[in-house]
Length: 263
Length: 326
Image (cartoon, rainbow over all chains, first blue to last red; front, side):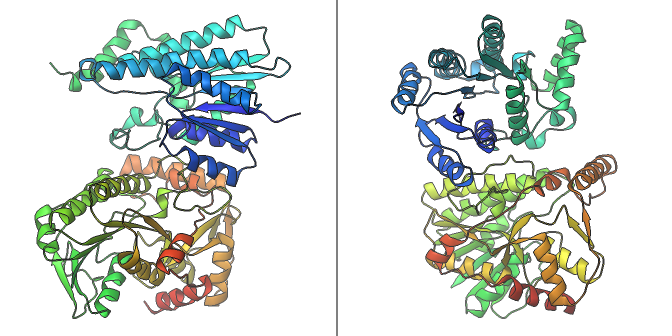
């Protein structure tokens, strides 16, 4: 049987890079997508040198719809069929709603919501029905909990969660396995995570290492898990979330917020 | 010519001071305690009391210096206040670079680490390879952030070269930051009797004298904005201890501790530290690292800086002799 090929978006840094390495370690050929000047050629060379896999790169801004289309045009011209799509690219924020500008939110929604929808549509259209395909959408625990200062980000991840669960029902009979990954905080790019080294206690124990998250994600995806929540403490939080009454959760969130609420 | 060396009592810094002083440069040795026992006494070395977190003292030390070697860092495995890593390694570096710009220093050599890459897969990493691991280790994370500082000052026009030593071993004091020295000294006393896992994990060992010469070569020939790995040979724990045994003539029965045991023990230690505040013997993020190799290529430094690697056996023989004499 021919080898599998996986598309990973947002592959140059953070979780995307770890997902790419995890797939490469399973001898899966890669199509890596990331913004230009984000170190993608260097990562591709590193993977080619250290693993026996074929790596194709596509440097483009996925907030432009035409780039989603041209990714699949490129695959077609190279006679490549993708069997796995990992919708990982995303833009986070940790800021009060009024503090970011219109352009930021527009971009965030385009990348976190529109791009995965378009890519999934294009991906499904080129599938070879004889072979099991895999779709892994990267959501977030922030899509499950109401987290202040993550208002738009959390909402985009709630969208991904709804979208993925709906597709799971719609495509139950198709030869495709669809998984939602809901990670908590991940110890990735330190310049973006200035808060990580000051976290303590439970907040700190929810932070997981990217290689661990990537392993659980790809492992769960191949097992056909519907939702993958990496990390023991995170799983516990999800359980607590489903049993605690709403007013208790609100109290906890408000008490956590007290020191930072600006009035 | 006057040259500032920060971290002058450190494992690399003190020998760098000596080498520069021997070459006839006037070395301003920055240290928090000018009576520090590890500070080298030499007619060309002037101890200057100061701290990279105190800009006033740093300005006093740097004024009139044409070159700066910034080797000061917090390199221990653990410290009580985790913010120290960020403050010393990132803010301290920012202070040094900012003042170097203001005081018109000609060139800065910044001592980073191969830890900014961390673990490797099959082939040794070089300067263009990406980091593949997360940032569980505070030292690595803050040194990575400090390199971003160096890049941003380089973009603003500062003439700066970054050097990345691997695991440095050699003739010097045995401290918490000198982990290889601790291992050798423990073995010679018959106290270090374990080999992690199957002993096949490979690390890159750089001989101190090579690293010091590499720093000076980086100052003389390093291309601004570039970084250079200053490493040595890739050696497994098994080879490390058999070399140590052959050269020292001391043979001990070594216990190969299973990886799973080390990981469990490190979690216990981490828990103990959380409860009691006592320094841990070992931590989970370091235990996890023992699963992976750390191989690095010094080819760029060899080509561009004329860097040379002392054979591991030769470097070890000199190091063992030195540690025996302590």
